[in-house]
Length: 143
Image (tube, rainbow, N blue to C red; front, side, top):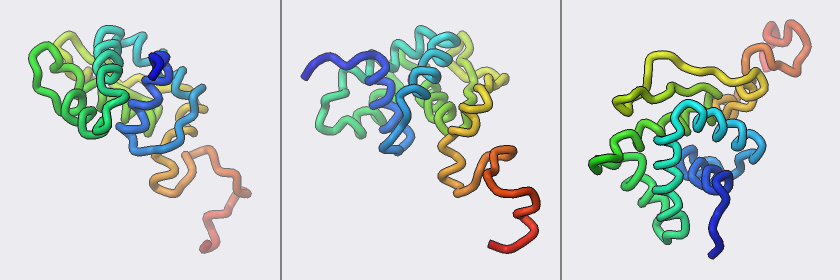
């Protein structure tokens, strides 16, 4: 099989980590750019690790073992980076990793459109605050 582009690799990994089958590629490009801008080394390590298992028959298991839960020396930042990939897809924000490979205390938010596109809203079957398509006062009557 041919080599995946970095974006295709990120989308494939994101599908495994989030459990979502359909992720928008344009949004993925924005998220990948944001994650790489803050943690280029850790993000590249995650993508490199995934590229080794992308075509594996048991890739979901291997993502869990080699990325999400690894305790391998030199790869301590991979689980935290995997968590940030999940976080950015669901909420449009993430916590950059510090020099110790652990998330910092300050979250970086995305754009309003990224926030509205968060997977969280589908999971809880609601719209993002300020993004309702219904008329003012809709909440006063029962569905």
